[in-house]
Image (cartoon, rainbow, N blue to C red):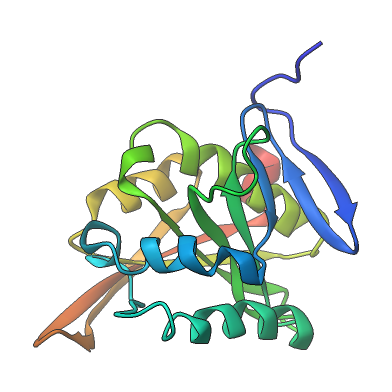
Length: 194
């Protein structure tokens, strides 16, 4: 019997919460994933709107260290997105950083390899991650910031119930230009009302 597409199951895999949806498995990002992380964070289509990129496999170690530090310092958690029948191939990654326990808020981030865009992969992944954030992490607020020139990502957040809260105008400087960021928020009370 298969699970409905909208059901999410969390299991503890050596203390890391593995999230399973109808089609996907969200698991811990491990050292063996460095090549997949590099492929994603060096792909021009992925990094166009993403604030992090790497020019070499060796430089990508900084990202791997960041994922590990989030867990060790308990300031966030990121998952590698894969299919259950091929857990070694990452389709992308998503998770939380800047987790403020006192204020019960965290920032949501995500990226996906272009060959998986427009197939519902990220929406399905984020639905599981959002449920985990509110239920297991006891978050009250989930925040997300998106480049104003990335309407697909803004639309995804709106579709997940996030409210657009404003624009931080020209707040980041990348590749010779200033970027403006759309700010989104989702409250636990909004989720309960859906």
